[in-house]
Image (tube, rainbow, N blue to C red; front, side, top):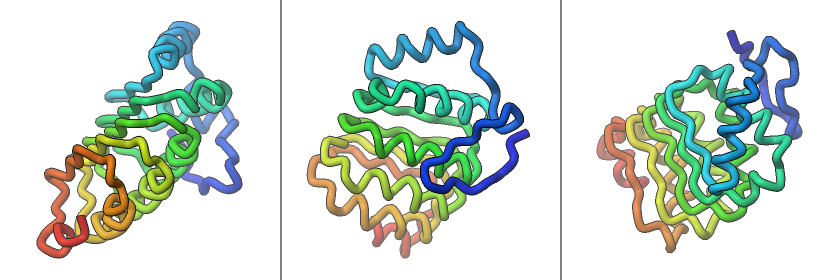
Length: 168
């Protein structure tokens, strides 16, 4: 059980109850992905995701080299999204960001949009099946509009409606 807490001043959860400690095998697999400059996370609990990002934070240098980041099917809280946003800011060379099937609260869009602002290399963004709604589309829309290098933008199945479609 992850206790929802706010993310402030780059501070990561460090109590055992806040996240699942990774096994040596899981750390080895993450290191292999980092060597390939990608992070692919699918179908894991929120506590495990936070454990992964806690481990990634210790590998700060490798985190900067990530080019492909995919986090799918996790259903994360706003607190977890804030932590992930903090890591995305450090990914200097990211070109693909896929956060599909996470059922975000529309407020999460703000925290995902903020680190994307300065990422000029991003050419593929996928936010499908996240229930962004018009409010989430509006929060993301301002960030995405300035991305000239973005070739792919997937916002399908987000209940954007006519108002949200105008924003994206």
